[in-house]
Image 1 (tube, rainbow, N blue to C red):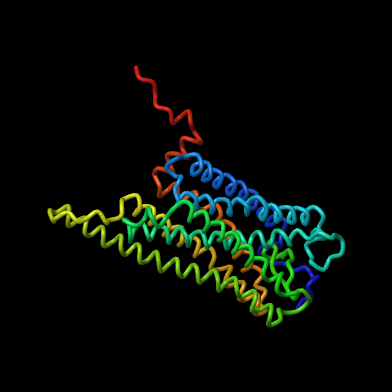
Image 2 (image 1 turned 90 degrees about the horizontal axis):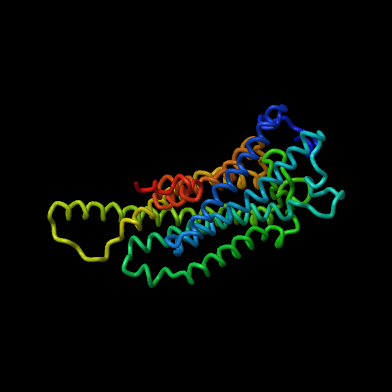
Length: 336
């Protein structure tokens, strides 16, 4: 086994050209995350139509993604640029370094983990909210309220960040260190070697929690979409002259929103699965340098996909975003 201090050449970091491309990618990702989620917040908070429980949940998701773009990715850019200019990583990249009393990874690591967990829990709450609107439309207004949604959002943030720092709180055998493979702050053994059994169990809380929520989200989405399909069939029969049913059917906007949440779930599941596989493999002692790089940055890139999904699938969101970005073009021409 190679020593930890020995530099290793990987596909991701072998040449200067690859390093430059990596920095360019990170900087572009920062702008994409900040721009996309700022637009989402502006549309949701600045439009009365979106002042709903669903809108609050989308705003919570945008704030979590903004934190990734403002704190997590810039640290990776700084470390990578320092490595390029000085031919050595900053002193704080090692948790064993005594050069500084402050280790940025002690903040950035939990922020990234916490925001990821917030995103998963928020998508789960969005799915539950849409399933109630689709399956029990008559009870939607009484069950889904702004107050309850706000409480659930606060709980999801508190629980997610508590889980994010739990490895550091409950085990002295785990530390955070900037990983040259993933270009992220990763949980590592507090001493040189593999993770001990207790640390192994604590770190596995992340994939267990995430896949439990994602699995539940997928199941609820399948039930909701199946109900939407049945509703569409009944509507076709009604259009052919059958008797009109009761008013306990979901509205078109509820159906459209449920499909959007289903798309969000699919995108996040696809982006999160590689990182969950890496966490399990890392705990078992596999480093998987190149795989860790792609896993972490696929997950980070997901932070700018939400606004794209909203813009493609939600016409009202798209029109409002268009008015915000190009107000002069959105004004109707003067009548002659």
